[in-house]
Length: 142
Image (spheres, rainbow, N blue to C red):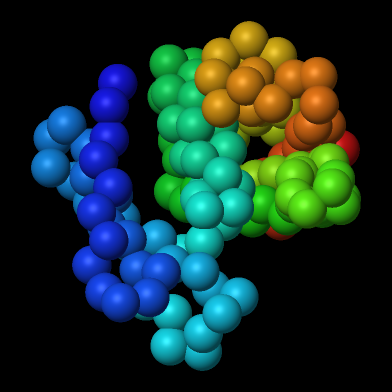
């Protein structure tokens, strides 16, 4: 796996490109109201949501669950360590809609974080990643 990063303005705006040519913009969002990209730390939260979201959808589809809506919200709490501010805890909230067995949705999330999600596994043991699952508006875990 390889990405490239290229600075594209006189400030902190970068374009990251993967091997397929897909791009995202990174920017130092704390230094400008005119930020055109997301911060590197925001991409970490996005990566957790994307990785675990892909896992959950895949598992639920294999279980023949009918997903009509899927979204996640991720919150990260940071701590000061010398000059850096890494994440200490991350909370992922999944909101799943459709004809879905709540126990299967809960199990899919558990499997993602315990076994499959490489992004959240990368943080172990330094960052605690927790999750909550909501099916059709009802909280089923967390």
